[in-house]
Length: 233
Image (cartoon, rainbow, N blue to C red; front, side, top):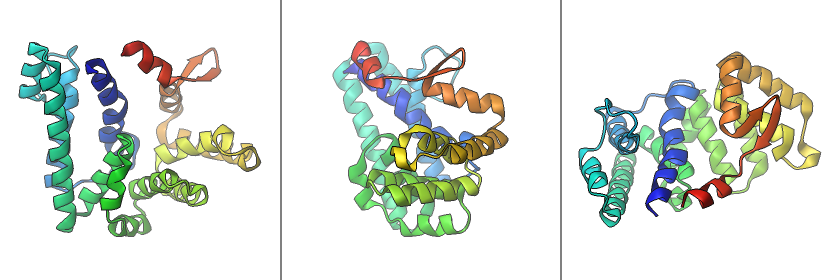
């Protein structure tokens, strides 16, 4: 269970906290939301024990890790997650749109889809219509989670046209092999690949491609994450 927690944080927390600032057109969260995100990021930093010079860690979690008490570690992380969600819901109800964005972001990357019913999408849809690429990308993920493929692709393309490198990158895979055969389109895949390379640079594009695949001598093979988790437990 303890190893699983580390894997969970590595695969899902890192994308959640980095996409808006690194892979995406810049989206600025409100100070109160960013503060909550930063505190949550410190949990992940605490697991990165290779970098002992990083001062942005959760001191209490570091102490628990040193004590190697699995129950206390799990309980503490669960408590921090619950507090994080509660704060975002509170801010969202008070009209902070960025809190709704952060909640939607969190629910997808942690696969906690039960949270979706608590998120008001109206302010996010407004942002999307104001040319906010990250809002459009998150809405695309919402439609994917509800198995609405038509709206998912339409919103993903909207995000791509608005300048989202992540959406452009995903569209390459969608049109190359993820969509049903009759909806796959090599020309569209090439179009979005060129867009992604222009946005990210060819080297970074290839790097992000390899983060989700085994790249060796131009070969492309999907990683079996279930197999990785099985060996790490």
